[in-house]
Length: 256
Image (cartoon, rainbow, N blue to C red; front, side, top):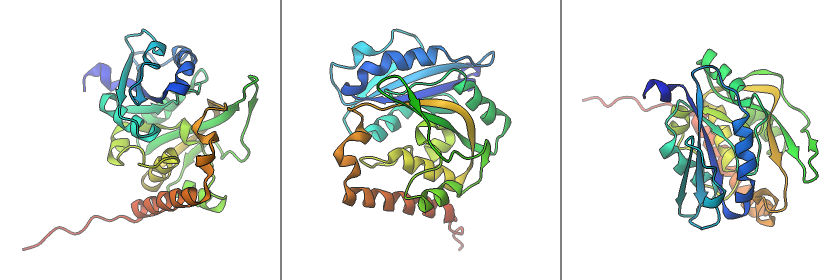
């Protein structure tokens, strides 16, 4: 990588036609970020599909790139966006969410000073249709998250993670080593979070790092998202992958 790319945070966003109208607000939240001297951000927007409804909402900014591809869900779109993520860190930002000022700088500060930390998360607030916000109970303490802690909490609390996967900032090499997001119809971001937790220490910031928009068109609000049979299958494969990663040991080398 060039020196400029070595000091870049790549923000990855999956978008589909119904959420395209929120892109300008997401962009303004990115523009408000202040990074340390010499650092920059790049925004990679990947449409989940090929329509004529998204491109017109993409900001005209040299730091923003837009790509399209076959529809496969947000996890597929984010993983495809990794082809264009050329910095050492990848930050997730869904098209309908917003980054509070200071979020990128805090993520970057942790990952730069602590090489043993593979990923960061932060406090999230629901952004309600009337503009008000609501918090989540039970946030962990500020500081490192030990390997396996997320899985244990998630399993003990009805498959509810103690940190929000939409707030992740991840070392790019680690994200690629895990294959990006899981190939699931939903919970693909939870699958990534638990995989990261299985192989690396993380970090939680108690400062608000995401406004998670609640609106009628979001995928997690649809009936299919809570179908009991599908949800049980998703949770089973998410957990099985995390446990397999946590216990994986490479086979011994072949001998003559």
